[in-house]
Length: 266
Image 1: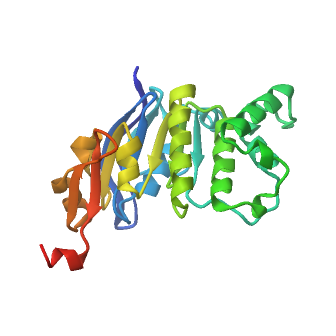
Image 2: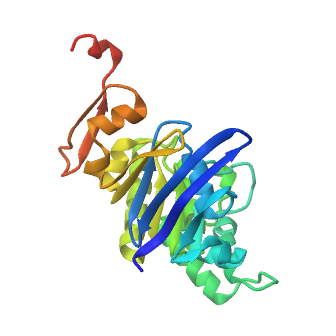
């Protein structure tokens, strides 16, 4: 079985409003799989469904070859870690305390910290480069530092799959690249399957093994970056003029939006 996560004909909505409509795709084991699309495409809802935190009205989600419904809550937390888009910054837990929370699915009823928990905690903090922040309060950190803390907490769960909802949103360029490099390293060195939502098409092109392009709850395209990031598919999804050419950094597409003032001159 080479599929880490499979979504079969999933639909989701409330009342007469449809958010996702008959979505199907497979995420290969060990892949860096990136979901893109304009606002209102249903990307965050899809992530919550894959994480097991949103109930869908039709379809099935399989995790490591088993239906999600067959997993207990604790077993699911040992298999999938989810880093949401909105990282809280209004509580005063220390970095160490927050990262250690990732060990709760592996602890007993009393939740007592064991020697093994401390070892994994230290590894996760060193891997994400936040070990020097261990005793700092979360509300004293920058956005990029907080993002790495919650990724470290996810790593502490020792998951086979990690889901991230726009982890680079609102970060500067240096922190965006650092987060993406961290996910690439996690995939390569730990064998973790990474599934991410991103608004940045060019970051998706540089890092993604496979892309899924959504619009209004439907799949526009899925596959390799060069299959998905074409002028035709992107114009259909985003409804604006784009230039798609080969990146000078490698064999992957580069996408440049064409401003209205330049469009008038073409």
